[in-house]
Image 1: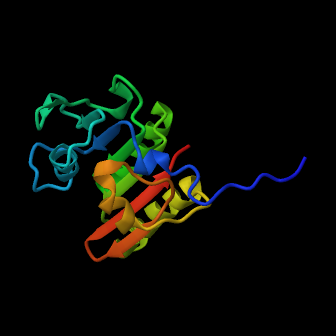
Image 2: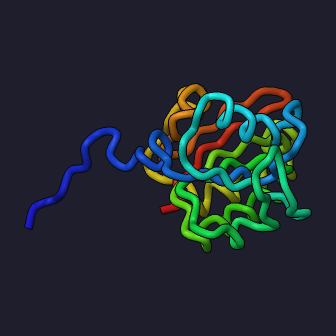
Length: 167
């Protein structure tokens, strides 16, 4: 039995063609990092289910909100995490437990924040880093249509975007 070769781009559908998306850390305020993805998905006509996740539940931007990704009626294919860096590992573990296939992490407080942030980033990389790296800019640009399978870090003083494959 020979070695199987994977075609370039194989497995990216969970990012670029996500059939459902959870926004963890969702907000009613579209100016907040947790409100922007919910707003932009609606504004640009994303047709799949969007599950706003906020510990308070209720309604966010007209959509039923869930206290946890574990509470959604179906497993989202893609999760967008807009939570503080310290909450990211637990949120990703919940995503994996729920069967989410891919995640985009929009957060600051990782390596650019010093040793504690670097340790959080190393924890994510050590447990979740797949074998492919992809551009965060590309994923954000294509967000309204889906997402991207892989892990990328785009660092700036106030922003880190990480794409994490959970499958």
